[in-house]
Length: 147
Image (cartoon, rainbow, N blue to C red; front, top):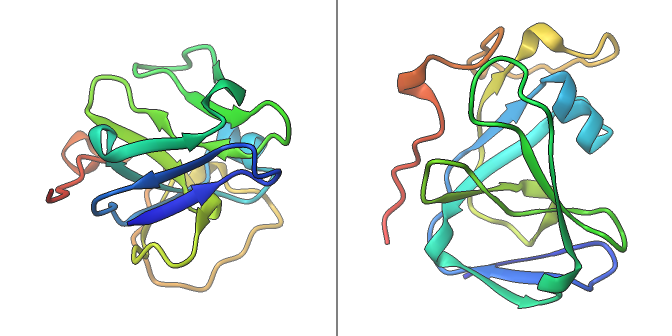
């Protein structure tokens, strides 16, 4: 069981199942949302997510479509602004930013995406695969999550 919560503690959730590996998204929109060089994204089955408290505090923002569906959606706590799990359109998964998970989720980073939009001040010294933009369709988040 993996638990997560927002900064103010108003929203809490748990995931009863496995999580995907973490992809580090360097897209400009992800930088804007996180205030950081990248967004550490992972996925879980929507059916395995359970809200423990504060679901009424969740606000969802949908950004205008840039290139192709699905649109970028971000959920956050309307009190403290912490990012929260949001359904990934057209799938049975939710996307979660790793920083809102409490404790070690057992998942690790496996790639960088949208590195063509890297912040000028960003540096990383790992040897994970890098994609200039979105990964090819066959390599997008299609987690093979058991249970």
